[in-house]
Amino acid sequence: MRCEDCQYYAYDEEYEEYVCDMDMDEDDYARIMQSGSKECPYWKNGDEYAVVRHQM
Image 1: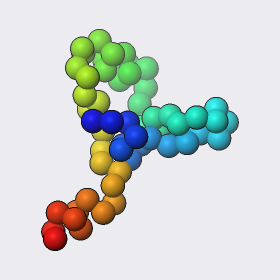
Image 2: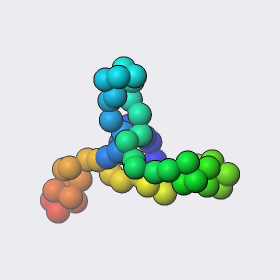
Image 3: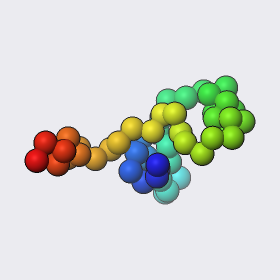
């Protein structure tokens, strides 16, 4: 999974960079960092056309 493909990866004009826009608190973030897993549990495909391509 790549952040660039995630629905929650958005450009923040204040920081002038891309950030994860998932609404999570510090406990959620700490749990992800301590899990040792490289996969984000909140990752969601941001490709709106994936379903259409699958149906073809």
